[in-house]
Amino acid sequence: MLRKIVICLPLTVFLLIVSFVEAQQSTKITRVGYLANTPATTAVDIKPLRERLRELGYVEGQNLRIEYRYFGSNVERLPELVGELIRLNVELIAVVGNEAASAASKTTKAIPIVMISTSEAVRSGFVASLARPGGNVTGTTSMGGDVLGKRLELLSEIISKFTRAGFLWSPSSPTAADNLKETESIARSLKIDLTSLEAKDTADIDKVFQTAATKRVQGIVVDGSAFFTAHQKQLIALELKHRLPTMYPNPRFVDAGGLMTYALDRKEQYRHAAEIIDKVLKGIKPADIPVERPTKFEFIINLKAAKQIGLTIPPNVLARADRVIR
Image 1 (spheres, rainbow, N blue to C red):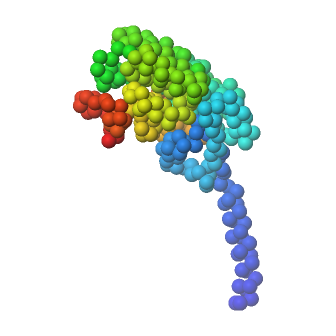
Image 2: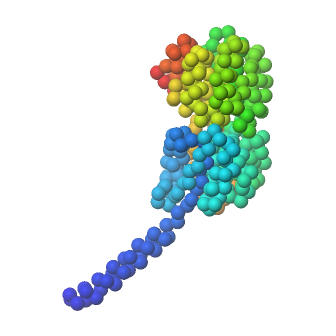
Image 3: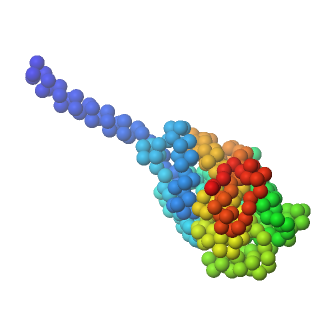
């Protein structure tokens, strides 16, 4: 009996090793590129995407590897970063924001691209239409009209005799000029005088707040841009210093101390993006996956900021907020 055990034991160990190796080799590692603004914003945003991917069977570190690349406010680096992801042979590139979507869609027509948190995808030229994207790009996108008018309306409800607004935008954003025109049109219909506040660099951000004060602007709407996200702290500090009520493009600014935001629900959008990523990885072409528009929006108010500014938020406006930071 002992002799049989001695003979069989090495064979058993060998078979176990072979089985283990085969199991390891059969677990395919899916490699996905993720191109975003900063590590800090990604740490918050990517949680719902990871959660939904896990529900769909993708676990980072086991059968999924995400290659992260960040460009901050330096949009000139984007083509280089897209090139790095291409050389890593990623199966798909998830892009956050219009700047990243623009660079990726211009750099590759072969690798599938899934947009997250973009706006005006058709007008920006990322896709042929929402229903039939027609190329290697799909994902989620919003329309300027979904939020621009509402942001001005909400400012008018919290600011007494609101007649002068500022629109802060950066030329680095592909949709900024169009958003400015649309906001100007909405402002005219609301009988609000709109001042264009253009910021190309950090020095300009200081200047535009001084300009706003000189022109007696009563409230500012900040356009969505990777540039402003990268300089979030500076914007909020200037808002509080000049006591100038500011409407931000997403909740991150308000969580960091800004006054308020009316924006799409980012958690919902990232979960939907995960579902689209899953479809692409399973072989469905981006051209055949309709681009989704957000259906849920968030109105968030920071009462701490309101107090620092010296602003009283009317009770009826507070009652409509999805979240109030006290």
